[in-house]
Image (cartoon, rainbow over all chains, first blue to last red; front, side, top):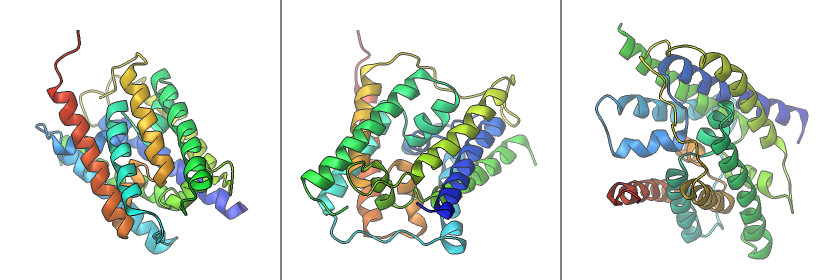
Length: 143
Length: 146
């Protein structure tokens, strides 16, 4: 990692934190992406549009960044399709069951000094590390 | 313009800033995320700075914001009410960690990938949304505990 990489990581991270702070300050909402996304499919009155707008913003923001500053990631040609589908199911089911993901528990939960979120973050980070090492170095998947 | 509509515009702008942050920081690259998680190989510590930067901002600002009686454009804060460490939290975080460690995608980057989707997006994102819907349906149809 070079200095520029460290700088963009810090700036990007601070932008994520600021977005979460502004959403809480103005709308009183937690910027947890999994929580925002899952309830889109089970709409309640006056609780749908802000979710869709936030998620559209996620895509728009990434588009702006890919156009101006960086490039979109290149697809991994040799990654097994079935494994990616299984991972998607696990991420969706797990974040819904656990009530949050990297943003909800990680950024916002830790921001609120929530013990639940600290526990969740430590679990998914450590399990993520173990899983990556097993998948890459034991099963030899080119990811 | 009334408060409700202003709140909706704020939501779009916050999503945009969040998406910018994800892409600028490198979180939208699953290979980079896996390099961060891969302590046994090509460890890339830069995502530590992403999380560090984000959490530093959130800890400081949330402390101030949550001292307010209400948000600026809404009647009340919508905060999670659960306090206990329960089985759902642990099992959910565990399953999420496995899926994240396999793929390098968490929900934010998976959705932001629609900005310039590739074949991975079209497999991972529908599977993730299906997983969310399945869990919601399960919890909705489950009889109350006890």
